[in-house]
Structures are given as structure tokens and as C-alpha cells.
Length: 198
Image (cartoon, rainbow, N blue to C red):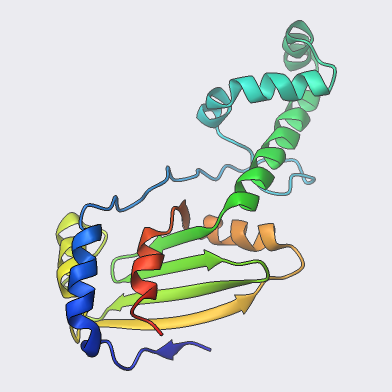
């Protein structure tokens, strides 16, 4: 499955040169997507938060228009048929999630000692794991992350790679990673470390 990278030392100079280019990378490039539960059993993903709905207000109005629901009718539905309003919110949430997941190309899940860097392909997902073996370095902190940037070629850092074919529902597989704490990113970290994991 996963394989340890054998010769990371031979690339130390090249790694340090490339590292200079990414020193100012934002640790998380995208807003963390908030997972919210819904009581609707037909909801495929999760309901958007109030803040997310507010940021998508224009899109939601367009969605209601496609359902032939005017602004006044929506107000009435919310007051007199809250269960119908809930269903509309869930349908819209699923549509938004489908769009987001379809466009996701890279994800990251970062813990105190590990970076899980995912690349989404057409039929499979590739993974690079960067593991810090010294628990004194917490890479979720600014200090620990700086240490990793300066020392990723040391003996205290290990690399592993793996890939896995998607199930029949690719978007559900990606959403499963988000539920486990992964964030959608632009992939700078994946592309950087990919150079050193043949």
C-alpha cells in the first residue's frame, strides 16, 4: 500500500531551493467547511450553515426561482410550512456540495505530527503523508510548521505515498475526507512534496 521514500537526502539542496518559494504559503488556503447535521434522511451531504447560506444569498434566490418560489412565498413557507423550508434548504445544500466536491482537486488534513496531502484524480486519489517523528514538534503551530519547512529532509521527517481507487460515488469519498477534517486547498503543499517522493 504505502511505501517509505528511500532517498530523500540526495535531494536536500534542491528541496531547500524549492522551499524558499513556499515559505510564505498560507497554512490553510481555504476556509474550513463547517459540517452541520440535518434531520432530513434524504440529505446526501450536510446542510450549509447560516453564514454559508448568507454568503450564497443570490444563488439561493436563483434556486428558489427555479422552484417557482417568490420571496414572499418563501417567507410564508418558512412561517407556515417549516418542514418544506427545511427540505428546500437541504436540496440547495446538496447542490452546493455537489458543485464544490466536483471541483475539488486537492485536500489537506493536518495534525500535530502529520500532513495528509491528497490529489483527486479522475478515478483515484493519491496521498502523500509527511510524518514528523519527534513529538516535540507540533506542525499545527506556527513554530512547528516553520521547523518542518526548515527540516523536512531530516531524519525526524518521514514520507509515505499511497493511492486508492474511488468507489462508485467519487464525491461521497471526497466528502468523507472533509468530514474527517480535511480542507479543500489549491495544492501547493502537495505539488511541493510530490517532487521529493518518486
